[in-house]
Length: 194
Image (cartoon, rainbow, N blue to C red; front, side, top):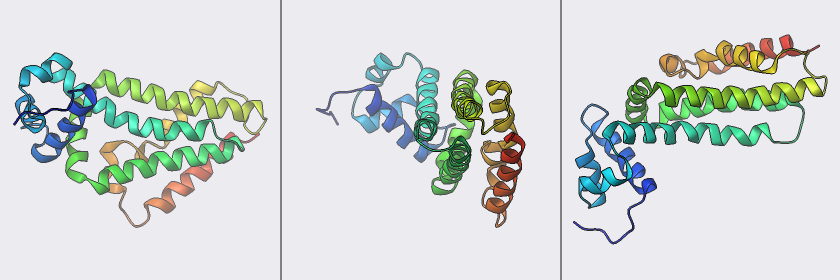
């Protein structure tokens, strides 16, 4: 089945996601991706030199969706405290949706994230960098006590890990998860105030 559409990296990544959803990380192959696209596997390899490179790229794409959605909160108007709350709440909500809306794909990506440590490290650096910008703005506006923004951001990220680290995904659907998250967020914000 040949295709007349131009083969792009984005089309390959979308097809890879479809294949991963259908077959899981253990069984998905480049040949499966090529079949979905109606091209040879050599065509896929022209864009991604190895299966590992393709898996890293699709993992990065998946993680970037969260980072991109949260970046708008960083640059929004309003008090830093409000933006910090929206950002952390947005991160929790994004992870809840990923786990709850498509559990098979979430499980697959959890496997891929375990394989792509450099991609994950970059993702965490991006997220903590966004948090650091909010913290820095809060310090500049005297909403938050002066400290090192990067260290504070990392502490906030680690303190809320239960609400965004995939290892805790089974707990995100608990009846009291939202209430517990809000209580933690209130405690953290109080600790930042002068």
